[in-house]
Image 1 (cartoon, rainbow, N blue to C red):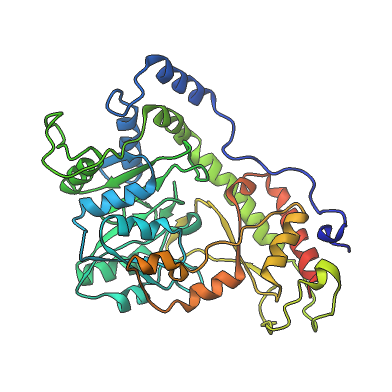
Image 2: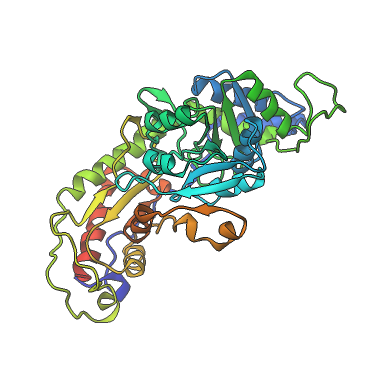
Length: 414
């Protein structure tokens, strides 16, 4: 069958759902109310406070603080926990760069360590091996919407007296052993950036259990003021890191439909996994090929024929609910990565290449980041691709398009 990249007919011609979804009636009503009130700033109205309280309650903790974005949220959470210059914070090597830059912003050193080779979340063994007398905190990332194995990571933190800051940017609504993410460590930070499961274009929220951590975090986000203190009293160094009432008006009504959207994405992901179970791609000797298809041959890699051609990256132990921000696929069949991404896009099923190893970014190492050996992340950067959140919002029967396109492209590239 002729590939679309070579002029053939694509598997899918229909568009995928856009993100964000259309505004709900509740969003329109609340945003209009705020706009007409003129009370747009976080210190003028009550919606930012209401949003922080709602997220804290959903995370089963008493305190929350809204912020301008989750990078600033991670920074402020670290400040609230007393992490600063001279400290080290251990982070996974398979994550967005902001996990590292938030540590640098706090004046601390990001220590970049490997992930579990199966589920791609922060490895407790790698954390244990990287702890030094300067280590102050670890930052598990709840990657792609599934929770990290917090029991194992918390055990390391308790053993060494470390704070735990959960990076929940991709995991709104996820559950670990029946408990919501965000309230499992000392602080948790959610993102409302444009690609996230709830978005106001930008924004974030910090949740925490301890009253003192909350007071210090709030102060860091509010120009060094104290809760209940004087307006022009600034006993601490702080910044204006606040969200706006307009953004909170977009986000508060979204909480009413979050579970429905999570269920929709899970239905699509489950359908992809079922379809992949029937995927058959001949793994014979590499053919010479021609044109773009020939460019897909990867003759330098000998495939493990005991593995299926493509598998879903599994959830970590303890996952009760995966909020499915992304569907991560591991491509076991030998194929040139750039060819795969280009050919799949041409078939109407665009995939994302995912994160490069964080430790390979020279800007981070030049800023002082310490990088541990990360073979699992290096392997993931060669074999793992993503199906983006907007595609996961499609009806579950469209999962067949994803697998049909994979079969077509991998078959041509064999």
